[in-house]
Image 1 (spheres, helix red, strand yellow):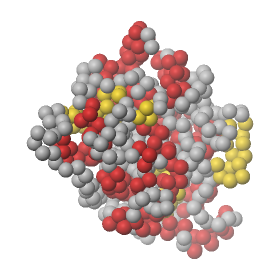
Image 2: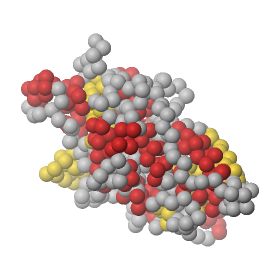
Image 3: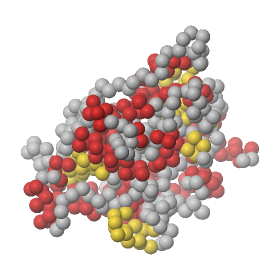
Image 4: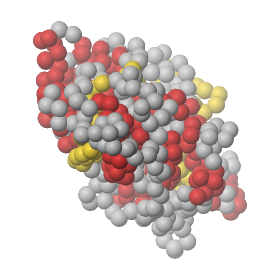
Length: 527
């Protein structure tokens, strides 16, 4: 890349960070005005895995590793590992916990101006288009497998989330959080003989775990208005969070995927990689948004203003039959205060019986439900600044947190924002975890078996929602989020809302440079 083009791109990144609209809340973050969580955190503590160093034999004595992280649940594991890291290495760990909007702006400013304030960022996976594409972070390929560092295996990570750790064939993110979304349902309600009889009489088929979004709709409609937690108050078919700025666009990605992605169209979802023309107003996307709007009437009207925690709390209180979201909810359902422990089922996101293949320009019918996996969310993980003067100590810290023993506790407890995604998290024959571990951690056996199976199937699905990792991803998503809210709130039709999103996408692309965006987008897709 020529010097003038390099400087121009760096300037564009910095301007984007400083001038973008208010960003979205981090996955798992606790918003300032959120309702108090129904479930309360337990006291699971990860194991110590490295011994203290002896004087004169500390690898990084006198060094300091400075980490920037979201001021939410994601800082939990860093604070826990601080003493162990310092005792094992002789280095000091300095943690800067900031809001999500400050996090990206501060880190991108630091690396573009080469001020060297931070060595490590616990970054969102969508940042890699700017960070790795701009050569602002360093690959840890030369450290991985070196016996001086704590051992962990990237091959332990399942294919879906593993793809987010790499960019351009190099390793950049050290495994930590493995975000993806699944469907949750009340297992007790679906197994109730009275409901089974009444549902079949009303809909003409057996009540079962929804395999398609049409079935999800029917189950939501059936349970809406019934008392689902024996408190004498009518409850709801579905619990969603639909507040602008509260991550609703993530859920639309998972929801809409089987309307657009399929065997004949595995990658065309966001943009045409040849022209960078937005694809969000395709017939598949429009049908998906129409279906989502239809679902809203089977939940409380208040959820139009709900954030993530309020939606989770409604489900944890036993007041909804269905939802779909991240792994946090499954783990939180096991905590003190949850009313659904022993009653919560999980399954991959439902599919459709036909999808609109953008590649073919037509609807394609499928014999079996067209189900699409996802790695939707932040998948927050550590990256090392290219300007770091202590890259080895920085990698040591991240490798320590990536240790399989620690990761199992992180994924099991649900109070640190970390979700499962490794072979070592899953039960035999799919993985190496032991059911006794999860029972010791407080899980109900039926709940954990379904939860892990749902995530294993999700991450191993050959069809996956394409993950957007380009410059300006935040801005594209913010625009989509605003227009999705206009549709579910009845201000715009689904078609009009998505056309408005496309207009905004085009403006962002033009501002950042179409050709450069096309180059980075193609690289992020492996084209």
